[in-house]
Length: 152
Image (cartoon, helix red, strand yellow):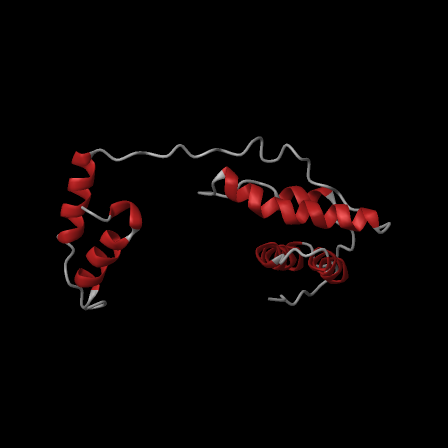
């Protein structure tokens, strides 16, 4: 999907997306993030024609309730945009590679038999809702259908 870009960085965003897609990358989610960055720039820096550290680092600040991995996903396309701009001779501030400090790896939790029993007991107790009349029927079937849970 192509996202329309506007504002002072439009040409560079379109060029980056075109370059990535010509190399075989779908660049869909990163294109969407660039669109969000585009809106951020228009709202906060409408007259700026240079990708400055104020713009980039404002974008690269951790938002309330944002996980560091979300910040990583959000800053990477903007970092690539700045590198692309520099590669074509346009000055742009590149967000340092240590932002965020490091990606947090998730540690999976293996549920005990007791935990699984409690989970499915809660799933089976799902109540009907006036907003979703079939919810009490669909949720238990759906959750029991997921491969790790079949046989319960």
